[in-house]
Image 1 (cartoon, rainbow, N blue to C red):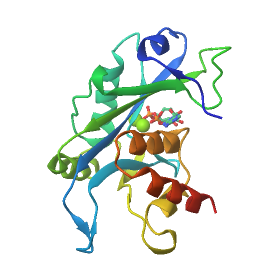
Image 2 (image 1 turned 90 degrees about the horizontal axis):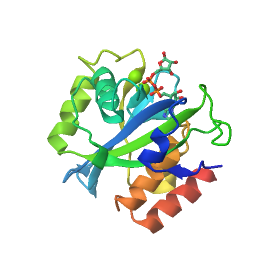
Image 3 (image 1 turned 180 degrees about the vertical axis):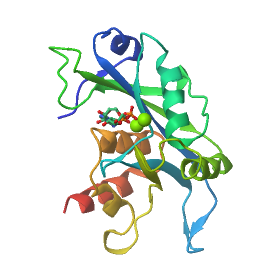
Image 4 (image 1 turned 45 degrees about the vertical axis):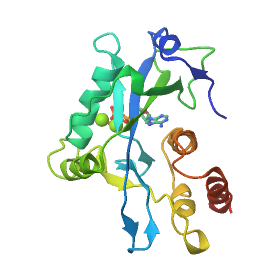
Length: 198
Ligand code: APR
Ligand code: MG
Ligand code: MG
């Protein structure tokens, strides 16, 4: 079940809990798959060390740094690129699955999620740096992945992608963002979700 959404300020009120920040980086693109299917957008996720898909970012310490400074630090480690994420890019915060808002403790985890649009050229730079200079490459992060946003025959593309395993609520964070930003049409997304569950 999904945790209740908290505002950034409400979430920061839980000072005894652990906090983590992650970001969805995306861009527009004119490129076409196999020269045919328009891609329209590029959305970045990562293959984590534990074999799960997730977003770049990680644990931050709000008593020592702002959420965004912690996120920028994590991004530097994981994708080898400084991305100026700000509080304006914050989208949602909630208790991680398994952490209870009714009995917050030092083991509870609050997840903050950000979305940032960048240029396609920067997406390429991130992918390059993540696979070369990023300190966590091959350690916490096995590699960046682009989310296939199209659906081809028999579930190829987004339906198969959504069938993988994701960390925490990263799959819902992705779906909600695709809908909110209009990166995939609602009917196509619902079809992909139905196909992914079959
Ligand atoms: N929803 C819910 N929880 C999430 C999400 C998400 N979308 N993404 C990550 N998490 C959880 C992870 O399970 C982890 O416990 O948030 C926590 C912090 O996120 P990470 O990105 O894994 O943290 P990071 O600081 O980058 O890396 C620390 O390195 O030494 C290992 O095992 C250690 O998981 C730890 C990791
Ligand atoms: Mg990290
Ligand atoms: Mg991380």
